[in-house]
Image (tube, rainbow, N blue to C red; front, side, top):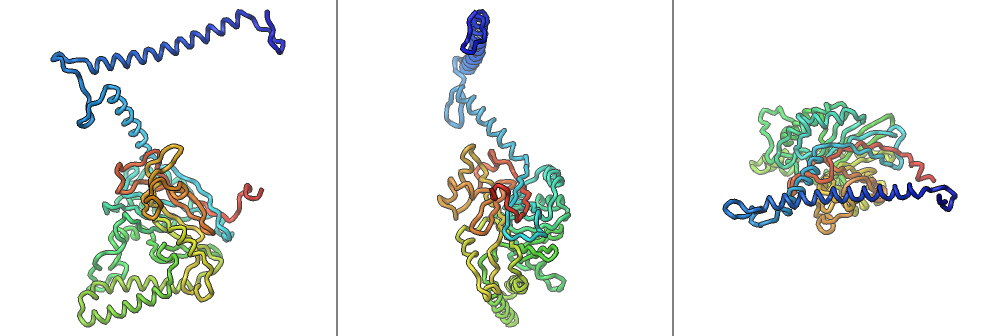
Length: 419
């Protein structure tokens, strides 16, 4: 019997036995892979063996001849991509807590369900899969940041989602760049004088969404709790001189009214749209006068504004300018990038659809692709989205599951910030 350095006894027979066990395991492992390799070689021999007419079997991709190994590799890769693409159908929920400095106590814990970039896609019959997920969430408002209909112009999938939401909570939406234009090319006939300006000029898909209880965010909307307010703005009001815009639209409307009375056909076509835009700007100017410095501003933008645009909005405003401009938003909700659509493990998205980005969107800084970040005093959240843009070469998401986001607003710093 021998002793080790700790004084424990070790039997030579047991040591030999352990070595033999390891050796047998190694032999079995080697034997297994040898059998696998032998099987592959036999399959290759069979697959490439000559037919009775002495012509060997061949495999082709297009006009290119490949070996059996190449053929099998192509199948394995195709199956791998197919399995990953199946993930495109499974929706998950991101949970995001966003700190807003000066958030009123009444809005502490206020929850926003942020949805973007459906692109006319269905998740189950009548959006049943989305409905199951959303039905398990508790939220105070739904904010939708565009590209819900998509370029095909069919709003059915979007309407099904709105039916799932069932107007249980306020639903606000904007149009995206792939959606049909929110305004018609020609105003509806109102010779019966039964239509409102909105009904004359808004596109069918927008009116259909409104009929289902959704609010088209074309002008500021105010959410009030107690004595505190959150303003919701579309991105068209970022750095916009509202007073000047209202004045210019008023002048254009008056000129078109005079021209129409003089029989100018073009003015008859454009006047409803100019009147609609003026009515929005005029109401916005009136609402701006009720804005308080303690109010919070949340802006909905399909594609997030550039950092430079956001920094400009943060310039201090004089008392006179506060009558014409909304201050910088506290939070911007956006979408458009669809999480990069195709993602590479350890790298992230290698392309986003943005001409404003460096390298035209190739190999972007990942902080711009999705998630929360800060630009000066403004928080920005970019949704990973639910689908892909219509200009994608292969129209599915890869290693990038579709997502909706439940955002919780808080004015409290986490404990880690206070350490």
